[in-house]
Length: 350
Image 1: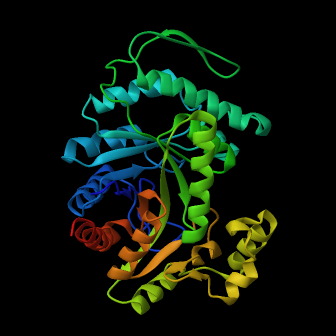
Image 2 (image 1 turned 120 degrees about the vertical axis):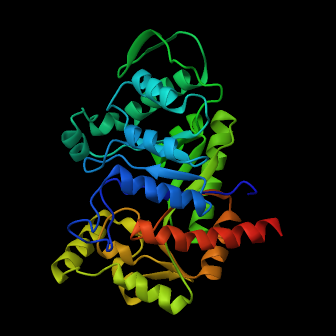
Image 3 (image 1 turned 180 degrees about the vertical axis):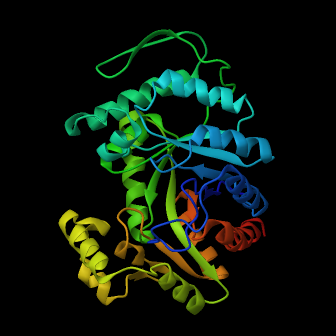
């Protein structure tokens, strides 16, 4: 479909009806994830993102089940630098893929808390970007060429390393994050991912990253965006269902998140209280209300199926080619979002 791709999310820590639910409505299991993957494939998704988190099932093992039970759905596997060596990760990916070209990699950095819970050493703050760059360079080399490999720097060292089976076509590599990640993406990755924001702001990110990549590495990279979706028959119904995602949030939690956002100057340096006055509606069909219950990816495209499809195409017009989509609960929302994808396919091909 005209260089636009979609991924759905595999809830390997359990499926939630509300963002703030203390426990999942459906606990994690391979059978449940495979059912979601099959639905995503039928709904027209290209990929399914398999997260890595202390609460999640193992992404490599989960991907192996999905690949066995689906026909063409690709697995976008999230992995943290440092959990294993670049050579071990490259070998796991090549074994999993077996040259079927259905494996992609999303490198995510995590936090010191994640590292402590998962048993690996997190780099010191001043060395975090260098560690990520070292890991990425070593991994890229291993994934992209045959033969024996050597690598030596302050973080990773190996000699005569091989990857079997070698890739006939290296897997696409994705990375998201702030400025350091963007710079590393410009040198080594296929896609740079960002969280949802206004179309204008996303366009600014794309322009800046393109210029940096071309000026410094003579490379062209592609761009993706992670965003939540609530698509219904009408805009009003979608907005009401957005509000339902906040079910169970307490005044204490609201105050805690407000304090956190004010301290970190997140949300694109926007004033939190100004967003409160606007009911967290940032622009047409774009809601940031999840900021009231979590930190990080909080943007939601909401509206009728046609409105959501049009909004996605607005982002595509500023060179967002990859959409990593979420929706609660995942088993139910995959079909709703599939209706949006179908509308986009029709508009692109007509």
